[in-house]
Image 1 (cartoon, rainbow, N blue to C red):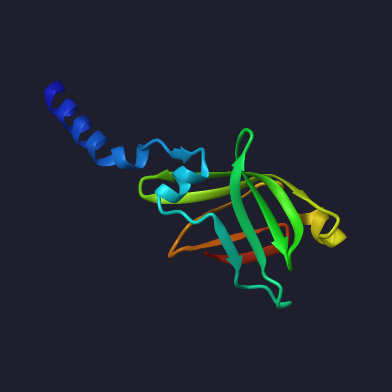
Image 2 (cartoon, helix red, strand yellow):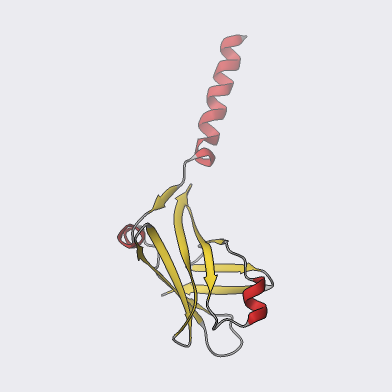
Length: 136
């Protein structure tokens, strides 16, 4: 009986192992690009004709991002790009808005946003704002 239960447990662990896979996070732009992840994202859902552009670069302590609208800096922060079980997730963290961002948007902007890359697109949102971005 114990042997049979052990076999079932072994089979179960084999089946669920992919879902327990540890996330692999990239620490440099070179690693991001090597893993076919874009480092520039263009907003496609803006309604003012001025798409937000997110750029990922190497920072002193890991990856950082900046977001510009019409060439003017709007947002900065840290970013992580991680792959787990075949899915890739981008997380914008410690977001700081510049004075170029309208006051109401600045007040509602979450400090952390995450999105999975699906068909070379990410859908970010939070604090009453949302946007779809395509890899460039």
